[in-house]
Length: 533
Image (tube, rainbow, N blue to C red):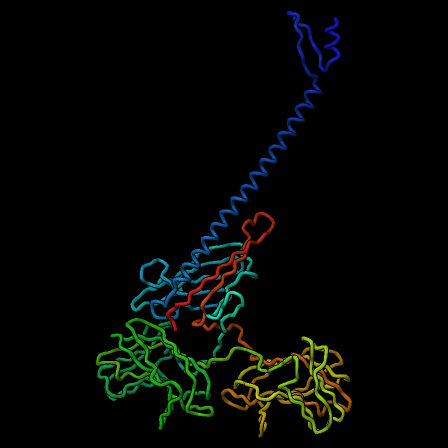
């Protein structure tokens, strides 16, 4: 009995059996509680396992994407480092912009250089390949094979950056961007027939527009039966500016690979050379592009009598045929830089000059609008000629400039601005007494103008702030941060031959299923031994 009481005092119950053995059990409530607890434990284990599986999946996805991006970067480096001139003689680099890098490289080791394009779209990074085809070879954009390399790209942070040979690894010296004026040639690709091109020979031959062209439907074809001593293809009455940098480019080949030369000269007697004399192009039997830069010479003011001449004697033989296309003769525009010196009056006033036939003073003072100091004009007596100016400003003809500056006056009186020839006869150079409505506090002012009154580059410009007609005795004027730059075109091209390094910055989200966490990849590729100089 004491055993039964002890058992009865314990958890659970017992039931006597025919064999007089005790059997333990649980109530229904206890069973339900136990089952519920088990279910909770299993659920927690299941959720935890699912989360671990998901995390492991994301980790594996990121590792896989990481490996894929490493491969993309490795391929880019390999192809960029092995670039060379195209199989038709074009520069190794065709396009070098922040969103696109196009170059030529033998990516499949078949001895033919493919056109390789790496570019960013809004959310992707892609690679395009063009195999040259035909005889002679051409790169047809319609045959480009495009492959998306990376998705989920952060396009606002991903870019190409280019450097020239002065890059040291510490300070970034990006390559100069180069812009061009319009092509001075008419019908440069012979798409409108042969006019106004002229073919002359004292031998025998013909000139026609034939197809297909290098980059269009037609090209100029010169067929020489008998070469003669004076055989040339030319376009005359071209307009040129003096002492100006120009670039001539063209595509050509000949049936035998014989060369030709190119000159730029006065169209009529005495046939003065205008800066390009007998440039010899090493022609092959397939399309190649040729580029030469030069400065005009032999004249001091704008001319309209220039002749661009392709010359064949001394190179061609009887029976030769030449193909010429895509001829461009363009002015090289300078890099947009501020042509005003000491624009912020830091630390002194030089080379600014203050002149008045009244009385006043010009000093630097603090604070400035941009920086520590600004220029201050204190006018005791205004006079009839009171001005602050900077002389010997370099300007390009028929070029759009943007003038900006910060200013105010003690009374809110205005100021007039002009750009003119510094010396007599003080020819206006495009901005004539532009009135600026000043206030009594710092404000930034901007105006655009196009240079006029001269041809070619000049170094005798004057930027003048005129106060007479606006100021009163006792006024003070404050001027700072004077900038005058050529307005760049909306899509400047790069001086591709000067590129010696390219940097690829790629931001992408490796695990887009999670909260966005862009990863950063960068690659710097040097290719200093290009064969396009």
